[in-house]
Length: 418
Image (cartoon, rainbow, N blue to C red; front, side, top):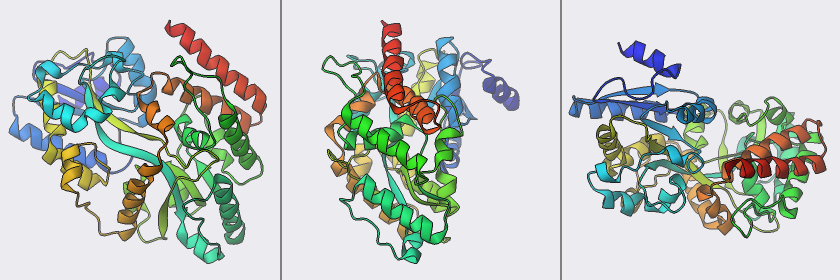
C-alpha cells in the first residue's frame, strides 16, 4: 500500500492525506539531509503509531516547478520543504491553533517567520530547516600548485576572477569560475556592486546601475572564457543548474554557491583535494552574500491539521533540530540550539573551517540582502534575472535588451497580481 501511495503522490493524484492520521511530506535534498530526515521521521512514527508519515523524495525541480501548480489546483502534500517561502505563502497553514506551545515557535523561529507568511500576517506556518548564506569556495590545492596566492577577505569579484583565471591557465583546468544558474546566486554580487531591487513604494524597481555593472562583468567573463558558460546556456527559462559537480571533480577553480554545499563537499570530495570557503567577494558597495534557506511549511489544504502540527512540533523541537543540524552540517535557525552550541558530526577540519567561515561571513551581509527573503517579489526578480542573463550569455540578446526585458517581465508579473 505504501508504494501505491508514493506512486500516486508522485503523479500529483493525491490532494491531501489518504485517510485520517496520515501526513504526507514532499522533501528534496541537496546532500545527506534526506537520510537524516528519514531517520527522524521513523523515530517519530515509532513514538506516534497513530500517525503514518509518508515522505515523497523529489528533485528540487519538482518543488520549484510542479508544487506551485499542484497548490494552485488545490492538490499537494500536507507539509513541504520549499525555498519559495513568501511567494507561495497564501497556501501555507497557520498552525497557531494546533501547536503545543506557539510561544516556543515565536522565541526560537520568530526572526524568519515573516519570510514564510503573507505580508501583515502573524501566522506561524513553518520553520527554516537551515539558514543558508551564499558564498565562494576555492580549490586550494590548485591555487597552491599554480603558485597563486588566495585573494584575501577584501578581494573584489574582479580580483577573484583574475586569480582563478591564472590558476586555470596554469593547471590546464577547464573552468576558472562558475556561479550556479540562479537569480538568487546572481543577487549577492549585484548588491555588492550597489544594486537594489526594492523601490520606494515596496514594489520592484527598474534594473539599476549597480545590478547592470555586475551583470556586464559576469557576461564578459562568460564570453572571454573566465566563467563556465555551460552552466548558464545548458538550460532554459528559470531552470536551476548547479556547478557543484564541476568543483567536486576538480574541474573548477572558484565556485560561487552557498553554505548548503558544505556537507555535499564533505561527502564527495573527501581527501581528493583541499578546499576552503572564502566568504563573499567585494564590490564597490559591499561584500555581501544572500541569506536564505529552505523552510518546512504546513499546507493549508491539509485534511489533518492536528497531525501536521504534531509532526512539525516534533521536528522543530530543540533536541531534534540540534540533531538535524549536527548530522547534516547545516546552520540551524533554532535560537536555543545556537545558544547551546553545536557539535558538528565531522572529523574533517576543512568542513569545520568552512562552517566557521560562513558564520563569519554573516557579519558582512548588507541591509538590502536581509530584506529580500521576506519581500514578496524576490522570486519574480530572480526568475527574470536568470532567464534574461542566460540569454545574454548565450548571445541571443544584447545586454541592454536583457535589462529591458527583465524590467518588462517583472512589470508584467506585478500587473498580473493586481
